[in-house]
Image 1 (cartoon, rainbow, N blue to C red):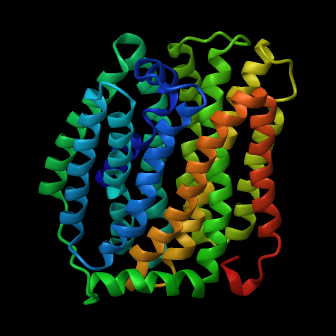
Image 2 (cartoon, rainbow, N blue to C red):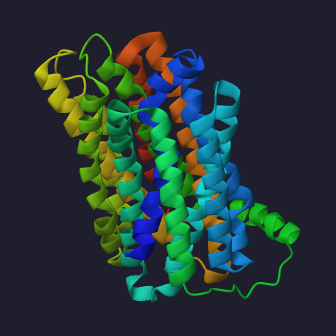
Amino acid sequence: MLLACASGLIAANIYCAQPLVGPIGAALGLSPRAGGLIVTLTQIGYGLGLLFIVPLGDLVENRKLALALIIVAIAGLLGAAAAPHAPPFLAAALLIGIGSVAVQVLVPYAAHMAPEPIRGRVVGNVMSGLMLGIMLARPVASLITELSSWRVVFYLSAVIMAGLAAVLACRLPLRVPASKLRYGDLLASMGHLAVATPILQRRALYHACLFGAFSLFWTATPLLLSGPAFHLSQGGIALFALAGVAGAVATPIAGRWADRGWSRAATTFAMLAVACAFLMTHVAAEGSALALGLLVTAAILLDFGVAANVTLGQRAIYALGAEYRSRLNGLYMATFFAGGAIGSAVGGWTYAQGGWTLASSVGLALPIIALICHQTERPSDGPR
């Protein structure tokens, strides 16, 4: 439970700015087209941390590594809160992303502590906390901004991270990896793992597509809902985002499916769910009550599919070997967060160019690509 809560609180840092692109951009002088950088740079920082810091989980004591990263996140949050204009804010956003990879030190840590027969369930429970953090970050940040200021969101997050660091320092047992590799050799080995591990390649590609669609959806929908079609306030957008939290129930369910050997069918279902989410947003006339209801349903379905797929992917790669679990996790996460960063940037740009029609069309294409690739999977490529 502690690791699930910690994962959610840390992961929230990555996405608390997502529904605040408009207010932050207006305050710092960023154009709507450049507003996607607010989320994109955080995700780029997260991706860099996944590639160059998370692999240290196979080399150095895990609790110490997680605490050091949380301190980096606190520095970034305070910098973002105090930033007077765009460049220092964007630099702080990068730092927030780097520090937030602490969550990807904690997830393999939980897998290491879990017996093999229930590892999928344990990972699913921790990932449910992570996904709840991501999904709750948007409505909570919107509500705080409506009641106070977007800067308060970052100040409050910094305080929460400081409290979390104190609790983890007291409660987490030590875990010292057995590996004696040097850091350079550790990084070099990741190239070999990336090339020689078909399960990793496929799972990373699948979730890069789905997470790109997820990021595009949650970057573009606040712009749609606050625009002339719906005229929702930040509070209304917060309530909309809150609906997506229901999708987090997918993670423990997907973990149990994986433990029972149903990974292939569950993966297909997750991809179809994301594709259907985009399709249903075009059933009703834009701006109508029915259209808003379908957007809410789409948000739940999309979040369910994405949450299920990431858990299925992690269960598959964690089964490959404990000695390089952190490196595999880093490669997996870095790949799909690169997809997320692209999705965030493309979401803002496509909405500015062609509205929801263009943005959702690109979003729909991503799970379809993943589904086509998944249908070519051979028995030797991954678990069924």
